Image (cartoon, rainbow, N blue to C red; front, side, top):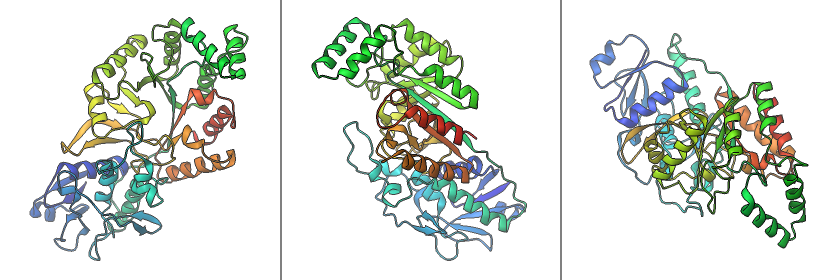
Length: 431
């Protein structure tokens, strides 16, 4: 066991040490504030405080893990062996940066508590993040720091037992609109037809007719094909279905549709099914609970995983609402329009609620690649190159690579053949 001495054991300290050592590095740890216990310990040990006790492995601590609340922190990001880092520790420390404080800063989304301008959907902009501003958004720096620390620890403690992770790929399919034309009812179908006709979108008029006459399958209905690919390639997948009433931003088919319910049950036979929470339920816990219960009634099993519409996360309130609705896992931590690691990691982690200073009982599964973040890239070559770069970073730390694709984009026709791109990702990176 690795024993960590510090002058004060706080919730932030415990949370960060367990994430870095236990979850990322697989090292059993213990904490102490008693000098005599630390000195008597004859296995691996480190000191995390302002001054070393003797000649032990020492990391000079920043104050962040011993504070409460939010303060305006000025970050100076520099390179540590080609890896960006911040919170320098000084010459006496065995590592030049307090990676524990830096990890907490990113994992807790500390910067999202600071004053910033939200977009029209109330979202934090990636351009306001330290990762974007300093060019490391596409690197899982928390995992990289942990592995660099492990290398230094093994030099001092060659017999230190640690775990070995395996690379994992997980595919998220966002189903906020299951069908483009089918199963929408007479009134919505007629209104859509007249709108397309009135705006001279003749291609859509034609598609509506051939789909309505069952000459051609609905363009968004690629579910059997996706399931076949996942089964063939042994892909770990989760389908997030929106199960909500129609609104300005929620335009899925009716929850009363038996065809829609049958589709969800069909998917549930081959993959995990979870809730894509509606736009309307973002700040409405009662509605969120209702959507969860309605989906559970369809699949006849508990639904514990969530994704928020448009990746809307208002920290800490979104996660508090999800906890109240009895969700245990969330897949919203990422950016819709920017490739990268929003929390600086490719490892799942518990949410830390800074105003309450407590680790909350909901696990966050960060993603780095969202299909709409790829749209702005100039061509398919640039797109696949970007995906490969992310994969290589995740592979380097044996983390989890999570991609988010919507069935809408996979079923669209335009500049890119999205289904072909998606299948290429499965074939290359699900190994």
